[in-house]
Image 1 (cartoon, rainbow, N blue to C red):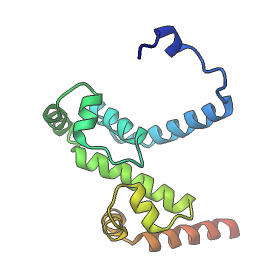
Image 2: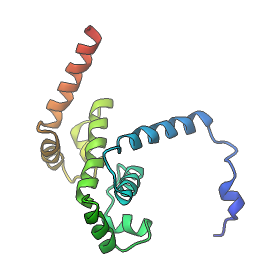
Image 3: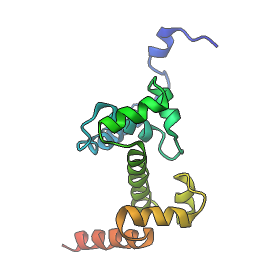
Amino acid sequence: MLIARQDLDSPLPLANAQTQRSCALLCERLCDGLADIQGTLARRVLQQLMSHSGKPCRADEIATRLGMSERTLHRRLADEKQPFRILHDRVKRNLAERLLRDSMLGLESIAQQLGYAEAASFSRAFKRWNGVSPDQWRRLQDDDSVARVLT
């Protein structure tokens, strides 16, 4: 299938402007959370991982999207002191926290969305990231919300 360049660049006639603004604001907020990442490639990798959040994404897929080999990706990230695994876990952690805080999804559903085979694997990873289980973290967030409302 061939598509003319002007068709790719033209606005969608049925696009919802409010949805577009909401998505743009969400992307800005997600990217604002990257302030501590100084390396250019690390930021690009995080942005690629965030744009595919909820779907497991391997280093070779990211490398292909960025126009390099997987080995080059790993080597350049090592130069920036940002291993792919750490970046990948960061995106998973942020998404897990958002799903736990903003939804009523169970651990099985969240684990599945993040690419874990079972809730137990997700729970172990979450505890490694945050020092508490997902259930404890969710309760702590609820307690903080109640405290903010009461004050």
